[in-house]
Image (tube, rainbow, N blue to C red):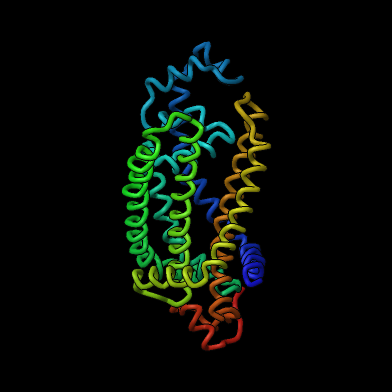
Length: 340
């Protein structure tokens, strides 16, 4: 019951702060734009005034594509058939499950995005925890307050995921899987075993992801300065409320699966230029926007669940936000609501 209430409350909190969604979408677009322009220039320089330019503009020219990839460098190396339509979703999923290395330029872009996200997430969680409108200076004050704390939490996250995708992934799919199939003669059984290992690995990764999410939430709501303490507190909360946190995570994941299914149904393939190209671009951007909405939905609903489970709901706003106080201080003070 509390899980359903938290989901509805979290969805309402996301709707009440459309500027956050617009901001993270703009950030994503701005970080991706230089890569897109660099790829465009690389393709333009390779095509020039050749006869292949017309066929590439009207559809897929496999011969030209192979030739381009054979001499491409930098961002051009990522221009493979997997970037078309729904194929990119499957390629990203495969890259995670198989722990496949990515191009250096994509890793750099991802690192820049994670750094920007580490700055914004403190303000986002603070806004969702307060559950009231706040002005820009208050939002960015919260971002600055938690930025360096979340950088330290990022180091913890890096160590956790390093162990998962390094040691655990290597042991499961390199050592254990090889041992399990050493005497197998039926390919279907080997495939089933690999799927089961994917599921087991995915469960461990998702559990750690949930713990780190609640570590962020506890850091913001309770104004924690020790990120080790916040991580331990996040683990303790998840373990004690395993059913509720897991069900909420699955419910949010189901929303994401629906969005992915819709995108799979309407995602355009390789098309021509003009209106068809712009339609494909807009569909892709709508999918990115929906994914970001789900990301914010996870944070808002998990915050609502945490507040509900520990009776931290019903925070009220202090008359002044500078210097910023934690939502827990507001709850104790019981000050009247103010803000935009």
